[in-house]
Amino acid sequence: MKKVQVLQVSIIIWFATITIGALLKILHRPYSDVLLAIGMLALLVFLVSALVEVYQSTRINNAEKWMWFIGLIFLPGIGIAGIFYLLVGRKNVVAKTDFVTKL
View: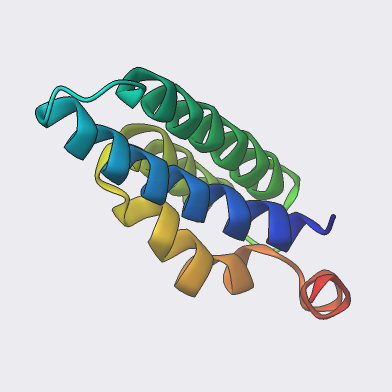
């Protein structure tokens, strides 16, 4: 599976399972803990993949790398950093040749 697919699939699984799991938790339904655990594992997969990609990037400088590290580590709970990374930031982080071949 390509890295961009891993990032996209893991963030979709994370968002869906966390949302449904939280709703089921509020309603005191069974298996809400399982969905929340699956969501946290999907978030971990996304974070590791994205952080490795940022770390290996030669296209951005160290200040931008630190910005992405801090944003991805401290803001994943609200989903803004991950979605922003996929939609806007990834094309700036990944070299043009790598980006074209991975799509």
